[in-house]
Image (cartoon, rainbow, N blue to C red; front, side, top):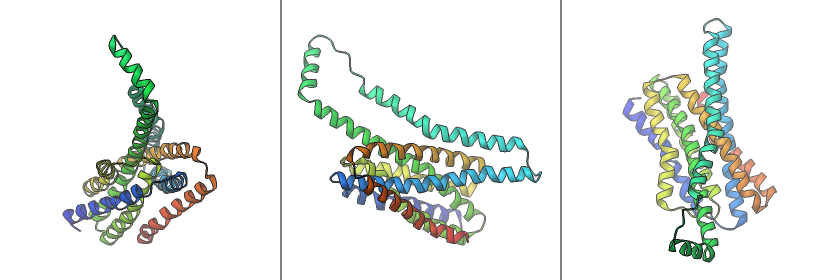
Length: 287
């Protein structure tokens, strides 16, 4: 499979995320639909977390086996494990710290002087609920975009797998990877819009979120066709795993106030199994 064909099919695999985004946008509503969609997305993310974590651990484990058989040094194993630790920490605590700093800056009260004090006070007294609603919408959209970023890191690693397979001559594997990742990416749109709750995102926001989440599949395909570096893959797996774990915690905290605990747990199971089902195509190709 040539470079142009591989890149084109990698782009198609990434852009299938736009199949799920509009559907998720249309499924807003009351508390029960919000919880169902948000927890479905958490289940899908839980599967993705398991997937990227196993891939990251596999890279370190392979280096450890090489050291065991005397074909590699212990320093390489330590280096890869350090990358795993740094990437995972950056994806969890790092994102949380950045988000906290952004929220503090966004909610900091402006300085008040002279007549502006009366105007600001009047606005604060007349529209507290409007201010709270705007802040809630902003935070929901930030969470959705954080999910898109985490999925994008994961999809970059998937694109690497497509590019490496095509470049090495495993055309059948590359083709089935594209089909499998494309089907799986289509479900990831739900994971992005699920935690938005009653916030109805604009089409421009959906287009940007889809580009952030799905575009890296295309970029990963380009890079994977040209370069194959396990340490490079490990960095993206670790970042994606940490970010996804952070997002799952945010989703759970956000929907907890709605109740419907049993429904939420059922939907987590459904989302996880949906991720497994779409991934079986890729597993079949490996077999």
